[in-house]
Length: 196
Image 1 (cartoon, rainbow, N blue to C red):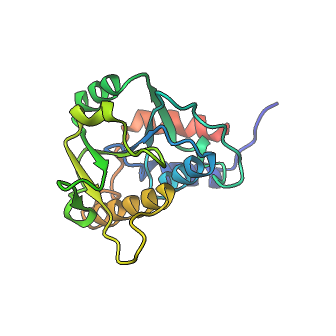
Image 2 (cartoon, helix red, strand yellow):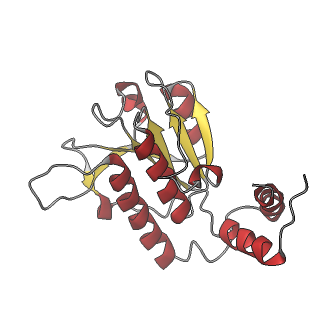
């Protein structure tokens, strides 16, 4: 069956792809709740994140439904890694800094981080946090300042807050003004997305 797509739809796809950010990414580390993962992917799509990295070493990647993600999973690329070392080698080989969400004493508040460069934010498991295997590869840690009695946000809410701060900084720096993706990749993805 051939899909008929309007020029208006193609223009919308090109417009979205032109704002995709390739040098800000998230690492989803053994997050088990499918609603959390779906909501994280939805936030990634909303703020123009091109690719998310998956590190599932002791938890199965959850089956994602369509409701909470708004089908965002089909608009955000995912890349799986077999180990913390493989993830770090891949991302650091591309010039990314790895920053974990953490309550450690060395963690700095989110607004203190420059999110306009090549940075991968690691979101850990809902109960255990970021895997210990990642510790040797982490370049720093961040936390979201909280003003209430509760110490932390739900991981999907934390992801949205972090990505909004990234959007705020990047928008001010003009990062959304010109495409990050090369022209030929933009056209390839436009054709691919048109079939979704």
